[in-house]
Length: 287
Image (cartoon, rainbow, N blue to C red; front, side):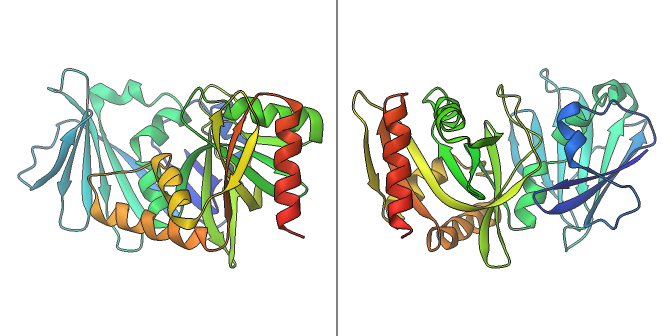
């Protein structure tokens, strides 16, 4: 089975020797199978688990990561830690080829698209393509992206819904967004992962502003400087903290983005006035 998914500008070919269920959240990201692809991930069945004699870089959260000859090797283990599901091998220097070797006893864990993307270290593949994932609600307003970022439960989805209600904005993703520089413009990409929001559209727009949300009894907004903006955005970015190259690259990407994208702190109530305040601020700044 061959399927190509266009995610954050990267065309990823998933090649499997078995049929799997296509999750609906991936439907809008699927490409014609005859188009060219950027990255290939091939799934291969193995009867006998590997016994690696390699340096261990990381051993936590049901994963062991080894330093292989051609790149990192990720071994995925179960809750009991004594049985492996399979291993993901990086097999190219240019991020173009990976193999996931799944063990026969764990084949049933690959029933659908979501299960497969869990196993292919999707955030690592994107980082290699200079893209990072920000925990945020993403709306499209007047052909630009406004991103609401904050810890879970702060009101990202609420503010996105208020903009949909009062300003006819379109909610693209309620929980996560891919970000990279596209032809010199920093853009937001819809992703097929959206937490509990169940809103996942494959739409790309240049970023107008990133809004750091805080709950408050009064509505107040201020523009953040680069250092302040970095602190909040970094804390809500998907991060492989054990990987120094990953961390350094993400830091550089965020810092580069902050040279071009404005970041605001919006302390607010969940009401129409909060929408009006933010709209006046960001539209006033652009005039």
